[in-house]
Length: 206
Ligand code: SF4
Ligand code: SF4
Image 1 (tube, helix red, strand yellow):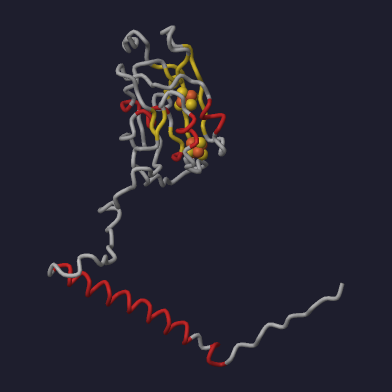
Image 2: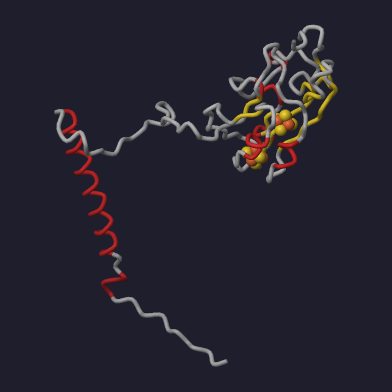
């Protein structure tokens, strides 16, 4: 099969200066600047309200409103007695394409609830925010409606959420033993205990 040689066209001196591109970019920026400036001035006088002008959000001091369907940081929903709704069925762990969910299930004392999570970890450094875990859950036990999107951290370990952070989205790292308010038996990383809490203090669901 014959080889077709395609020679790259030499740039002209005018093109080598990149001036047309720079001037073109400046023109676009100036047009947008003047348009927004005049529209904001007109809006302040009650004119041209039907034409929208660009708005700058001073993030993070002024967070941008999120859409209702926005998928943010996860949380585990709780029953009336403060225990997780999760029944440890492992569907979310199985469906997760990033394999970033780790659950250890324990036996629940209520015969109507088969299991519950002793441990529930999500590695946000690996999560792709697909939302499959939320969709697959048969108990509405996991949601991504916290509206939390600033999940940056200084280390990979800090990106890992455990059951404490998942049940209380207001908790932020570093989490110490005093931050553990879970009353059911769970693997307690903040206090370093294998199992902390008991079902006697957490009344059973009716
Ligand atoms: S959002 Fe997707 S990737 Fe993240 S934990 Fe859920 S299933 Fe896994
Ligand atoms: S969060 Fe839902 S899907 Fe995941 S283990 Fe618990 S009950 Fe099952």
